[in-house]
Amino acid sequence: MNHSRQRRIPQNQIKIERRRAQRKLRQRQGAEGLKPFPTATIANGKSEWSSVEEERLARQQAIEEQLRVYRNVLPKLLKRFETIPDPRNPKTIKHKSTVLLLYGILAFVFQMMSRREANREMTLPQFQENLKLLFPELDSVPHQDTLNRLLSRIPVDQIQDALIELVQDFIRNKKFARYLVSQRYSIVMDGTQKMAGSLLWTEGCLQREKRHKQKDGTTTTQTQYYVYVLEANLVFPNGVTIPLMSEFLSAAEIDPSTSKQDCESKAFHRLAAKMKKKFPRLPILILLDGLYPNGPVLKRCRDYGWQFMIVLQDDSLPSVWAEFHGLGKLEKQNTCSQKWGDRRQQFRWVNNIEYRWGEKERKRQTLHVVVCEERWEEIDPHTAKPVEKTSRHAWISSEPLNRDNMHERCNLVARHRWAIESNILVEKHHGYQYEHRFSENWTAMKGYHFLMRLGHLINVLSQWTTHLAQIVRRRGVRGLIQFIRDTCKGPWLDADRIRELLAAPLQLRLE
Image (cartoon, rainbow, N blue to C red; front, side, top):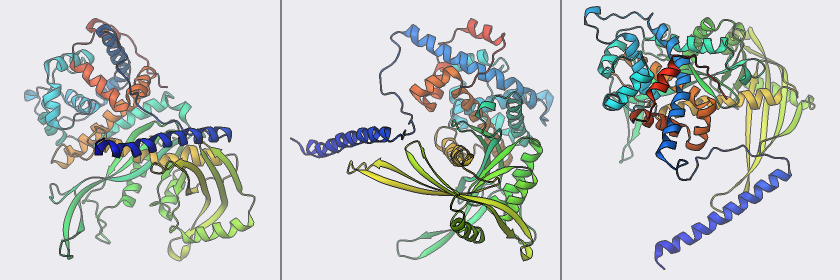
């Protein structure tokens, strides 16, 4: 027996024991009324088709379902794009601005990694033919450099306005109505770094000093230039996350009184004002992380009529924590326990805590605080033994808390603040190239970012349509996108059938 086989035997034995322990744990949890949350796993099997004709039919059906999303989204977008002023000379224009912007969206829908890859892949003859079949508006496939030049000269914020108006249209048509909690739209905001480097490639970049420890133990500092974005997404309890708005932090946003550069807190107030203007009467429940529990943020949310659930960290708002611990000893009835998934939860809450801030603490807000402590069991991957895990979460609520709304506000709403972090990770590492600037022009870079968010929105809608959701369960989200992309690259489509569908109204149905 060779050494590598000897090493594999203990590992295989642990794997077998771990599976047995997981099976016993699931049986015990089931007997105790605990139901572990389902996990998505891509099928590990051979092809589900036994002939080329079956594969052709499957690819045709996938494209037809995808076409429902395209035809419900793109005509509205193109109509809005037509209102964006085009500064180019009309006599020298080869590609209309609407065609260029549509081409830019499709590059992100098909998850092209760069402008060069888009030029190389999307100009293949078969790919071009299928794109023109699916998108009659795309009379020709332009060069990415042409799109880059256009984005550097137009008001790219209007591209984001087109995305917002598209979401407004879905809201008016009640496409998301069945996903609401307490008849409110949950909107989460979170900031993230888009890119960083030692080169000042545009004056819009923020800067900071980074410390580096040398081999000899000394420390040196180096100036780093970076781009930071505050994102806002619609989130729903079923896992759907809809890109909504982006606010770029810029070196131009300098506080003249303190000479401090832009920050996420300042960007929040700018983005909140824009959101209130775009959605003046929308019932909103805003979700924020531990950076935001402060007087100005709370007041702005209340002034706008927004409900909120904000993470309360242990070192935030000491006076509020003191009131919570003091009143909690008196209001012992404000507790409840429940089982959720495979977890046992214990809630404690205190309502009507007065928070003061500002000069001489003259400003005040009434807050409601809840703490959730939970326990669950997992199998240790190294020992195959069950181990108990614990976690603790605390939130500030704009509304009084009770046993009836505790699960809804905490589990179905507040926890989904993490959905935007997952969404950002998807955009960074799952094909949307969030950290790639696509252009060295600040305006064009923002334009590509807004086109990326539009492309992501189209893919999100696609993966939640009835038929394509089944493909996602078998292949995963990236597998679906690759399946659609490969289909568009090959001679799979029935052109007459596609033209027939384009001539008929196509209704979008979400799962």
